[in-house]
Image (cartoon, rainbow, N blue to C red; front, side):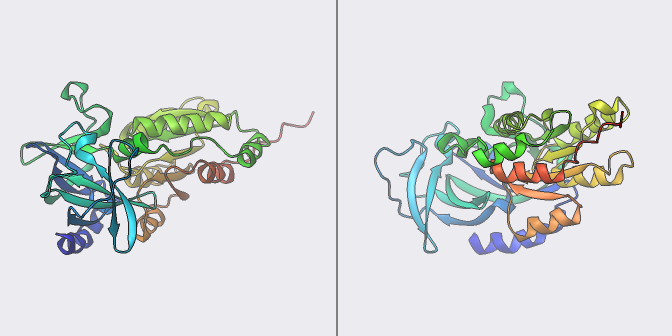
Length: 312
C-alpha cells in the first residue's frame, strides 16, 4: 500500500488550489468510513512492533522505529471511541506529518483514495454524535465519510504552547494594534480558540469564520460597511469544508474590494508542495500550526503601521 499511495498522491496534486481534495479512506472498527487528506500521509504499513512506557497518555499505543526515526504511535480507534487496536495484529499504521512533526496512527483497515469537491464537505450536525474530533462529513458512493480532526486528537495528548514568549509580547506591546481587526478562519474549534487567545494577547480584535465560504461572505459584507470595522489581515486554515484556504485566497485576490488584504495561511500541512501552492495562490505568508511566536511575527510584519494623526 505504501508504494501505491506515494504514486497516487502525485496524481492528485493538481486538485489542490481548486477547492478539491484527495482523501485516504479508512475504518476504525465498523463500517463507518473516515478520511484524512492524502498530503498528510507519508506511508501506510502493517502494524509494527510497539514499545510502550508506563505512565504515558492512554491514547498513545507506544512508539516504533520508522526508517531509523523513533515516532509516537497514537491509537486513532481509541481516540474516536472504538475498541483499541494496539494488540490487533491486522491493524495498519498510517504514518503522517502534521506541522513538521511525524507520528503514526493505528487504524483498522485502509480502503482507497477518493477525490472530494470542497463544496460537498460540510460541518457535521451535532446529532451525528461525532463530537469535536470530526470536522467535516460528506457522502462517498452513498456512504457517510467523516474527516477526522487530527489536530484535536494531537492536542488532547500533547497541547502545543499557546502563550507568546516574553520577547514577542514586548514586541506586540510596542505596536498600536488594537484598532485593527484580523479575521481567523478555521473549521477546528480548538484552533479557533487558540488563535483568538493569541490575538487577544496582542490586543488585536478578531472576526471569526468556520470555513472559507463563510469568511468570503463576511469579508464582502465588511468591505461595503464602515471602514473602521474592516479587516486588515486574514489568518486562514487550508483544509476546510465548503471552501478551502487555497480557494479562499484565490477568491480574495480576484475580488477588487478585497485583493489588498494580507493573507497568512496557517495549517498543519507542510512540505515543498504546500510552499509552492502558497506562492501560486498569492498568499502573503505561511506559518505551520501551532507556533505562536512565528505567527505573531508574521502578523506584526504584515499589518500596516497605524496612520499618523492629522497635524493640529
